[in-house]
Image 1: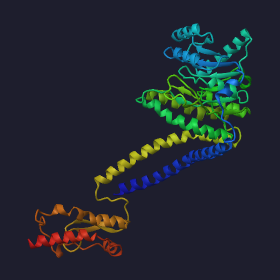
Image 2 (image 1 turned 180 degrees about the vertical axis):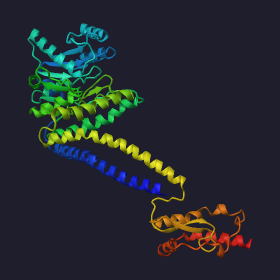
Image 3 (image 1 turned 135 degrees about the vertical axis):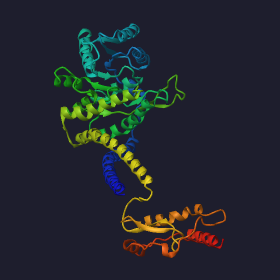
Image 4 (image 1 turned 120 degrees about the vertical axis):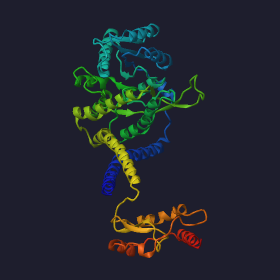
Length: 482
């Protein structure tokens, strides 16, 4: 009894504390949701007077030279398909692709060479160090190769775009980068999961996360004058922004000391005063494989996310380590209040993930308590004050069941359940013709009630449903007549 009482109180306290923690964490999410919908309504009302961005406007702008950087390590199975899809479908002329490979990865090099033979805008870059290295190390190698290419050709790239080896690049994405840069110094396009089989459950768990972040949360952060982190794919930079970052980093644009160099570069650009934006734009685009030629499509990047649980766990752990811990160690809590609020929102994962595990433990604890309670049927939580419970035959009160003292502090509901429960089981004590199984003891066989129990009965007397009492009394009379 005491064990159940202690477990119940501990469950109540820990459950209340977890509830408060979840509410505090969720309040931040509710704020960003409300802020997004309010600002969206305001922007929609103002935008009614202006024409929508059209494909003609994008194509009318003079095309700047764009460099696409794609790091690749053991990507022989997908790199050729990605490069061919990009070169065949992108609606842009003035661009070149630089693919970063490793000297100990000949399979990927061979695939890039095959594509480069058909498309001269594709260039293979072999790094000096054997792989694997970090993505930031590969991107820095590509930036140096880009500068060397500019030195040989005299061509200067004004826009630099980064993608992964398995990305599906939208045909209009380069036109949109060209239209917005250099008025903006960093443009991040939405990233959505590539269409795969529905059985790839792990892959599709990313769909919900990126749909929330890349269609609502990052837009709200930008409107609140926070900072927009780069997703590492589908990100365009102005040349002046990368040149300044290279100057600050002593020749290295991307930080090799962080697992999330893309997140860190967005924060660094915001702190340097550059203009960054998360752009969600849709345009009617006809495609031979589209069922509806006039369908409005997002200008977004389709990415392939991990398909197995171990891969997803490694990636999530890398994100948490880089975003919450490494960025904290590298930069602390810099910038205005809006940036700090964004940092708090991103770094609270350290607490929310821990609380999530505690929540699962609390549920397991509650199930264990319920099992103990069912094993000890006489212990009716929550334990409480004086009262009575039916345990055996009684000839004078409530049919044929005796009464014993309930634990201290039992409420009125516990009294009612304790007294009414035996009557609900009364048919099992009757024979086929309503005869009682066994005799009834006389009044002299009833033990006297304890003072505490009697006081409890007089002060808080439980009531039995009249229908139950009437049916049981009728059955008792029939039993005596028989």
